[in-house]
Image (cartoon, rainbow over all chains, first blue to last red; front, side, top):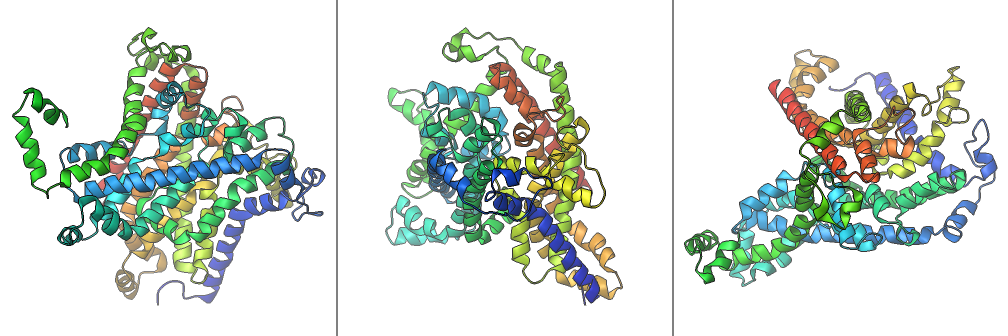
Length: 276
Length: 317
């Protein structure tokens, strides 16, 4: 008896939402279609929608003439290392803060929560100085080291582990598990959903991270995909639109696949934390 | 925290040692030690790459640190609040502050409205394929800004762009979106709404689904129509969610940087330069002390705006 009882009203909502959806994803469709077009067709006025002579030339050029294979590998390495670091270190501290008693716990928790709101721009300059003094400018460790842990990760893991029954600890102790064994063999296996959420959000953030790698990666062999695409789109290739659109596809599409696979965890994670 | 135990063998402050033992003694044997073993990796990395930079940034903001001082950190001079004064009296910084305010004041309500509209439409109107719609609306959020910029620069081109072509079908002559100082900021706001409403939509959807069905039903029996039910039941219950989304969106928009950086470089005529971007430019010129001061000013604004929003939206519940 609730909602729109009028069948026409319901159909209208469907039409409006579908049109809105098409408008929202139109840029992506246009990007993918454009990546198969030749230079001449892309510049035509008025623009064409469907490619007239579809070819993979743009992609061949990206990987053969430009070095997108290397940038892709760099992006994957950095994102995987950052994700692994966050999953391991944040769940370790999250567990300690949620269920264990230890001296200094309250102070540590206060510092972690207190830094949640600090904007990245505040740490940017000194972080660059630290990384430069450590000689890590233009290296892969320079790209991933500053992001191995985040207060947000600890916050998320602590919230989740606080919801687990504390009896688990006593059960583990009775069974003779060591304190660290309880974490590794009892707690961690139960953290699947939280780890999935944190892992996906972290991977996403690292893959799309732009400003830090732009400043730190100074030679081509250390570029990540967004850096390479940004520099090509403002550099000497900035008029090769087909190439740029294909590059954009290489940046976006792998992430879209990851997103499709882990959709459910994404939605849960965002609904509970609000961080994208 | 470890100083008392370290100091104890030398005989200094031995009285603190039992206290520490007592505090950890409440737990099981080995619990405190295990906790610190688990905490050490995070704490070390966090201290090095977050806490220390936050402190150093504050210190730097009161000095004349420049790029060339990187190798000779002791040659910098303490100059008090000069950097803060210089920032606040810099006309470009003031312009950047005005642009950021424009972006936040127009962008946040617009993003929230579109997100809420999409969430309500999906919640009430769409039953089949809801996850497909949700996925589609969320896609812009997970997309790299650099890729977005490449595509949108095409779409917004004055002559051959997709947007002006579509507008042309309806007899509308579209403007030079990114080239006209009057339209550059609205273009970036339009892009930001497109890119960000998906996050709010998903949080609103979760909020809408937690509104009890029985309340809606009771109101319907009392003769309330759909609009009245939304306004008097759903909307008030959604207030905490609304607060949450508006705070996170505002905090993000106050730091907006990437859109102008990749789309307009702050132009034309500084019409899209933002606080974060101008701060980054100062870093690029090597004015590290000034950049640190500007970053702390942004931090203060974010803290104040967040506190204000909490007051505003809490008071009315």
